[in-house]
Structure formats: C-alpha cells, structure tokens
Length: 317
Length: 277
Image (cartoon, rainbow over all chains, first blue to last red; front, side):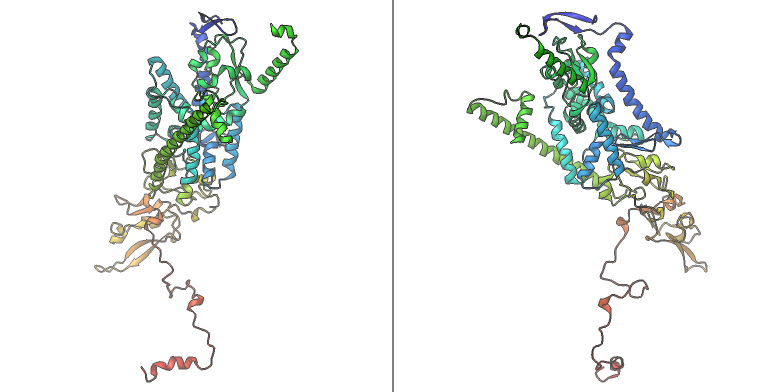
C-alpha cells in the first residue's frame, strides 16, 4: 500500500514496519470508510423500514413491509423474525410461546450464527451508532478510562439476565435494555428512553472505552457465543503481517486480534469479533480480509500440507 | 472440575494468570487463591447487580393497575412475561388505538396499552392486534371480540348526567354490545313525575373497549374503563341467593331423605299447632 509511513522497526517476518496513513483523496477515504458507511446504511435503513411500515403504511402487494421492531417483527406479513435472546428469556420465565416467535428466533439465530454472531452488534444494533460516536469522540479528545473492567463481565450480566428471568418471571434484560428502548422509541414514539441511551453514550465517552458494547451488554455476549461457528470471518495472513498494531488501535474488541492465535487459525476466530471491518481497510499490508471460514480452513490445510511436503533441508533452513 | 479448568483458561486468556499448568505447590496454591478470589468477586458483583436489577423489575411489574391492555391480553403477570415489546399489535391496529409504554410512563416499558378517552378500541371483528402478536401475550384462543375483557366500565353516579335526572344515555347508545353491556333502567324520581333513565353496566358482557368513556359528554368522563380487579368485589361461597333461578340448590341443602314413615309431612307441618308452641 502506498498510503503508509516508514517505521524504523522490522516486523517478525523481516519486513519493515509501515504504519497506516489516511489517504488524501476522497475516493481513498471512502475506500477506508467503506464498511462504516455500509454499516450505517444497514442500521439506518432497517430502522427506516420499521418506521415507514408503522407510520407511512409501507407495504408490498398489500402486505406490511416490515412490521414490529428489532425485538420481534414480521417481513411482508409472512416471515417471522425475533430476537433469540429475548425469546430465551421468555422461555426461562416458564411461559409457552407461540411457534411464530420460535420460528422467528430460529431464523435470526441461524442468520447470525452464519454471518458471525456479533455481526448483529456492528451491522444492525442501533446503539452501535451511539457507542461508535462516543468512541470516535474519545479518540479525538483523548480521554482515559476511569477504571479497568474485565470484558468478561458481560458473561456475568448474561447469566444474570437468564437467572433473573427465571426468578422474577419477566424477561429481565428486555425490561431494562437501552437497545430496545432506543429502537422502540425511534420506531413507535419518543419517550424518556433517550436518557438510557445518553447514559450509554456518557459511559462510553468519559468512563470506559467501549464500556457498553465491549464490557456490559448481555446481548453482545449472547451473540458472541452464537458466533463461535460463524462462517464469515476476518482472515489473517501472517506472511505479510508486520505486527504494526494499527488494527488493534481501531478495533473495539482488541483482545480478538491476538495475532498468535490468529496466525494459528488463519483468521480472527473469537466470537467476540463483531465483523465491523474497521481493521480490514486500515491494515497497511492488507493482511486482513473478510473471507469464508471453510475457505480459510482449506487454505490452512493446504499450507500445512505444503510444509510437510517440503524437503527437510529447506525446512531446517 | 471442568468449570474450574474453563475458568482458569479464561483467566489465563485475559492475562490474569501467568500459566495454567504451573509447577510447584506454592505457585499452584497462589493461583488457586487468586482463582477463588476472582470467583468471590464475580459472585459478589453478580449478587449486588442482580439485587438492584430484580428490584427495578419488580417495581415496574407492580406499577400496572391502570393499564388497559389490547383484547386477548392475558392475566397481567403472564402478559408481562410473554410480551416481547415488538409493537406488532400497534402496527396492526387500524385506528391507532394502541401505543407502547415509553420510559417514564407508569407502565412496564414497551408494553402495549390504550387510553380510551383518547382513542377507544373499536372492536374489529377479526382482531388484527391479537393476530399480529407473535408470542401469544394476546391469547390466540380469543375468537370473538365480544368475549374480550380489556377492562370494565364503571359509572360515577354522582357525576353521570343520566343519574342526575338529565336525558343523556350516550354511553348506552354508543355501546357496541347494545342492551347487554349497558342497559337503561327507569328509576322513579321524587321531585317530578318524570322517571330517570339510568345506565347500568353489566360486567358479564362489558369488554372494556372504552367507547362509552370516549363518548361521555361530561368534562371528566363519568363512565370509565378500569381493570376489573380494582373495582369488582366477589360474593364468595358463603352466601347463596336462593331466590335466583340460576342458583341451583346443591345437594347439601336438600331436605334429608325420609327414611321412616313416622315423620310424615303432615305431622311436620302440624307442629306449629301443637301444645309446646
């Protein structure tokens, strides 16, 4: 890549380390921002589809286009969709739900298990726009964390949501979720839900970097588990990587960019990766790219076979 | 054991432990101590957070007696559990009757309700809101909208025009279950020859649609829909209205079967004329 500045260090692969430089041209900038732009388009257009259906009666062949909100919805009056985590919580309150919502939850779970569980977080969740804004401002202004918090707290919150649903008898996270408050009030009418959203924004801006999405959100934790089998992954090429660290600087979940693990797997394997695509255009060596898991696997297998078939003297060298 | 290994692995992954398979007792017990400390911290955090969280949930769940729910809504605690807050009932309602409770309203966040004085339920025969509900929080078994129980209309007879002696009866005429949910009775009046025509609500038929409340001409509605359990009493099993036709005489109250010819009916009736009394 020509858009880079030289660094005196050498990478572990012997190449000189180059750092990322934002291109001067508009088209270059757009190339770097392409995934952010695509993500904003998906996030906003889904909200717009919901809004248009309820307020402007958007429909195709007299069938409502997309009725409901991100908790549960129906596409064209036929395809049910539902938040699998919300349905799981309702299930734990020991209430039998209708098959419609079970099918909907199954569809959504299957889609995100395929696309990468937390793809939901980066590409669909409206709170992501708020926390991305907070993260951007925080980088611009240079604000430090007030305290350190383990990113595994979210799994405790996830367990709590499930246990409390069973104990109290209501879907525990759905009743306090700032995510649901945000999209529900954007779609059905503004109340005081923005206060919760503001809380998330301030947490992320002043108190803890990626505080909500990266530390607390149980829905993200749920999708991180679903994403263990994800087929869309960021592949990693260790031959070109110089460990310059530019990817980890922009990554909202930097622990997933453990380059030793990534080198072994040939990809960012962790379910906590949200496929946001920030790292892909920013890598000066183009070592990171979206790819299919099976494709990456096949490549890895091929490489290991190549190594074995190499003559021993060359391997020693 | 498996859980412990998992936790150790996690701790190692986050850099809290230096190595999972450490050599030597000292290191092992130190890492065990650290591990137990982490477990205790996690448990304490979960317990504290859980208490606050549970408190919030219960506060919200209690704050609901004034919610008038869409037709087919289940008993409130079951409704709370099942409603996924998706708003598809709101989408489906052709009259924009339903709304979702937003934060700050004294109702559980995101649940559907309506305010009859603003827009009542016009009782669509095909019940589109119930059909749209994906979870069954609105009971799919409700087939006839006239069987729904959204609430119960109650009349404030101190402020009802008809009960004051004016001719109003608007609620009676607007009621979709004419002569069933609301009937009009003639009451004699002391000060003139004209009778009063007073509306009476019958809970067995009232669906709580709120069309009466919406139509009531008084400044504040004198007929209002409320959740029935807030205003309805219950006679209970201790009293029996023996004169009503539909109250069958139970086995317990039947006179004892006559077994001996000694106590005949005529003797039993005659005892009033005997000496003792």
